[in-house]
Amino acid sequence: MDTVVACSTPFGSSALSVVRVSGPKTKSFVLSLQKNTKKIKHSSPLLSSFLDEDGVVFDEGIITVFFGPNSYTGEDLAEISCHGNPIIVDQIISLACSFGCRIAEPGEFTKRAYLSGKLDISQAEAVSSLISSRSLEGAKLTYKNLGGELSANISSAKETLISVVGEIEFNLDISEEGLQPDLFTKSSQKILLLKNKMEEALSGFKKTNILNLGASVVIAGPTNAGKSTLFNLFLEQERAIISKVPGTTRDVLQDTINLKGMPIVLKDTAGIRKTKDKIEREGINKTQKELLSADLVLFLGKKEKRKKKDNKYIYIFNKSDIKKPASGEYDIQISALHGKNIKALKNLITKKLSGGSSVSSFILTSKRQVENIGRAKEHMELALKGLSTETSLELVVEDLNSSIFYLDKITKKTTKEDILSSIFSSFCVGK
Ligand SMILES: Nc1nc2c(ncn2[C@@H]2O[C@H](COP(=O)(O)OP(=O)(O)O)[C@@H](O)[C@H]2O)c(=O)[nH]1
Ligand SMILES: [Mg+2]
Image 1 (cartoon, rainbow, N blue to C red):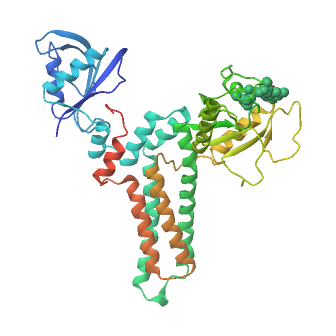
Image 2: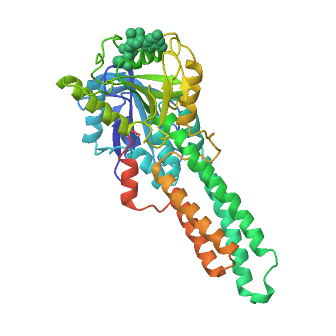
Image 3: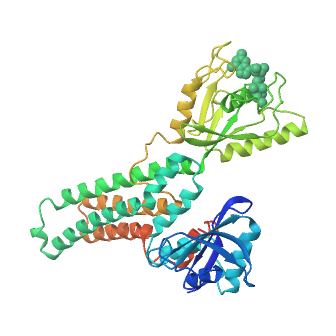
């Protein structure tokens, strides 16, 4: 196995940087850096000078070595804290390379942790989401999976399915007439409970995903409706120009806000109208694109009659201080200028974004997990249908085994190399 090296902290000047080394050459490399060689102990920080190839000291810092298998990667692992200067970091990395180490690929430390059985694949995914999470609440949820909460949930679901399969198979072995009388109802009840849990997990994903990645919320509507006024109100600053002149906002303006712990990228757009102005038309094209990719649209106008109710839209009646809605359907009335009913609007936004769901204890953090839970749930539904119509028990067993197969894929130790590569390549170098 190669010994790998990488800087685990962001590039640039800072008080400290941390270089990580993992693999069989770790201890001897750390010794080569020291002037007065001290005995290396497991997990004990050691103040050390750093020597270059000519024996000249170029920095000093703290080295902590963790002996495998009791380390993050399961191998010998060193964390070298040096002064946060890219030149010093480069020097340590190039010394390690001359010593026979190679530069780690993105996510390679976590991949090694996975390969040595320190983490299962769902925990490795939790590491990645924890690093990229954009809200504290999202980080807290994700951290639970790092501790193995998802793995525990999956294994308990699998145990239930295995026990149902076992019972059905036992009954298949005895004669048809001798079937346990409550076999169908008992099995259905157990599977139904599990299926509901899967549904909860799937609907909770929407909220977790928004807490981790943030949501794109677009303010749109006709010119002069008060979009920029609302945008500024949310930002609590005069960010966009407000004017009675229609067509003032042309480019998409955006900023990040936090609503009840939810990170939101809020966008102010050009008002939609027919215009001969080339630049304004370009702005309106941009608005249309934003509308397509938005998680939620705050539309300052009424719903078009022929349009079906779109769940992505909140139809807002603005300027309620000077007029009342004559016709049309609105979800809420506000006054952006006077901040009237804004609290209710904020509540509506967070409710819509979380899909009204609360996060269950079954937390999913990646699309891969969602896909597999979805497939497992589909097969549970088929098994339930089979049980309710009392069709062949063999087919029910087959569906339950497929459910187990998909649940297994979430935490499996033997995941295919291409799936591994796609998971770990999204990590940063040094993790
Ligand atoms: N009375 C009243 N005027 C508003 C309200 N919101 C915006 N306006 C005014 O409507 C005009 C257009 O606002 P602006 O935010 O630039 O609209 P936009 O074109 O949709 O971005 C400005 O003169 C605002 O002061 C409101 O709630 N009440
Ligand atoms: Mg505007």
